[in-house]
Amino acid sequence: MRKCLLASVAVLMSITTCLAGPDKIKLGVIDDMNGPYAAVQGPGDFLAAQMAVEDFGGNVLGKPIEVLSGDHQNKADTGALIARRWYDVDGVDAIFGLGHSAVALAVQQIAREKNKIDIVTSGGTSLLTGPNCSPNGAHWTFDTYALSAGAVKAALRSGAKTFFFIVADYGLGHAIQKDTAALIEKGGGKVLGAVRHPLGTADFSSYMLQAQASKADVIVLANAGADLVTSVKTAVDFGIVQGGQRLIGTTVFLTDIPAIGLKATEGMVLTQAFYWDQNDKTREFSARFEKRHGAPPTEMQAATYSGVAHYLKAVKAAGTDEAQAVMKKIKELPVNDFMTDGAKVREDGRLLRNMYLFEVKKPSESKSKWDVQKQLAVISPSEAWRPLSEGGCPLIK
Image 1 (tube, rainbow, N blue to C red):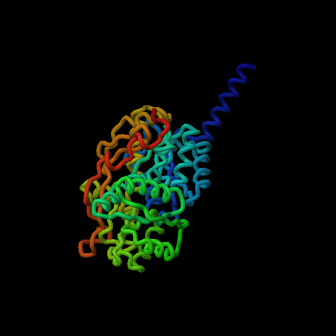
Image 2: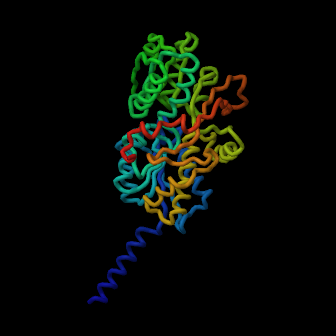
Image 3: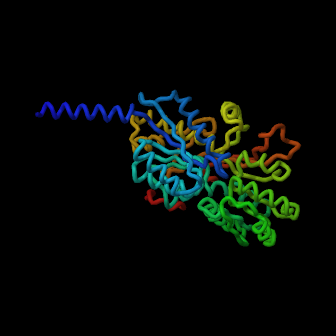
């Protein structure tokens, strides 16, 4: 009887192994794949993750690496549903992208519950390394504090005193408004008011009229993607800049500038983690990416490659894909790649990379469609990122 039972167990284990397939390292990219942010993240993030896997050799610890793609449709519940299924059913080890703040916050909590890993390469809210920080999460590219720091400090230094906000009414916009307002007030400026708009707004006329009527020196656009493009075009139609007010786009990405046009955006100052034409390394990667994607990478897409590559290095160094062992190596190992030079992940999950202050070129300065920015300054980690003591991360004693 005992021999029969053991034989039955062996057969069942064999069947289970066959059904489950070979052991793999599975990675997932959850992003806006078809909506207003698809051009700056989405399919490009997925491609960047695939390229990182290919460059790593396609396997780690003797296991093949597979990359899955999911569309959160800019809905937190949709993103959370995908993450739960991937972690529980599909055996995904780590999720990247998460280019919507509410989705990123939801998935980071799920990853913590399931003892899996999330590396946010496209989401922006600074809550991810503040009150919502996680021992299983890392924030890789930018956040709302850093996006505000460069451009707002530059505006204050140039003499701007008063500010008005046009805010996307969801997590990213709220976080940008909160972090930027704090920097403005700390720098001696004053916030005159704010107005919020729904995601995917087609007509910004009423919002821009309120901003214009405020007579603020600077109008801060706390939105992104198609909403940013539409709001800047509306500002041009209303003669905002010609009337003496300035625009700050806190989340302006590479693809936004040609979509708006250099005439409308020239002179705009913005903060980014990466631009394709910074040096030989950025140009080499960007050329490979553009050949397959049709456009150079945005900072989100470049950072997704960086995050996936570093994750795989950490798995190899840990000798296991167990989440806590891998997270330990993610924080121990310096991040070195074409866009990152020796940066370390802080205890709260924040990657302390350099950020850069750029200015949009004049039409006469541009030599091609994507030749749209010039670098003004390097923003060091000590200036770019919120101090650890001010974040409110409960992991920090």
